[in-house]
Image (tube, rainbow, N blue to C red; front, side, top):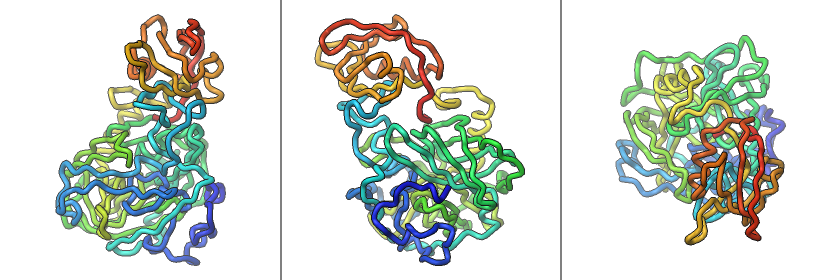
Length: 431
């Protein structure tokens, strides 16, 4: 899998064979991103990507120094690195709405043709290669974001010998295909998304054809406490190497609002473990280990607040496992999506003043929307006979539908002619 990573752009030290970690500096101060941003809700401020730096909002000084943080708003890359907004007719979503045409997942993903990378600094202990023990039950994850012409990377935790993998939702959000590598053996597997919970940033994957995998040792009895020594392990900067960064729990029960640099796609995450370990992009979904080498949390987010001091956040493992169990039971809830959602393939923009319906801003190639003949400038007026008043309503109607479901779609084309088609939704990108 590491050899199939996307084009690394201009040559950097990260372009060397990722299996030869000893041949390059493993300090996170010097490592540039092979996958810029690399699926990191844990994208630290100051990492330059395609000419733009993601900056954390200015929270209180207590948050910046790792002693507080309840209610802090942390502006982070929500999942991947940016390739800018979608262009009409090139990409879109199954009913995404907004003030103007935009990509179906905000600014996630990166364009392989664009320059990536950018060193960052940290006051935390420099990362070192993960030991064999720290690597057991840990996988690296690379996903194709087909509709965004991008790839993403992150980390996961092995729960069962047959390949049930726990990770963050934002690691696989928007993915159409995912490959996972067991870093203890080097074996790669295709993975399917069992289910996701975007609200709590948890996802469950299933590896295809996996057996006898080493599993992570989970500590569900003793919750992390302030002052505990911890180690964050992950696929830092998406290079394919597992590295470990030591630190200390600085607070528990923390709440943050994580969002993209554009201020969209925000999620309120609560009950988090706060640490000063040097968590960076790509670590997302990886284990936060206690002094016994057992998993106490999932590395999820981080901010440097414009300073060298890193503040990291992890979801307690007991919380993540409770959500994973619900996903594995296969029952959808208000927050849990089982499998892949149904996908129409349109991007919707703002409704015209005084007009009703969902204005089509773009259509994804090779989707049911294109096959039915929809085009930018059309207006969707109903789904299965239910009138559509806005893009938000279209999104809501489609959100509860499954791949393969047949729908009857009515719309008015740009010339004002009414159209109707019966079509079947396809499997869309992971929610």
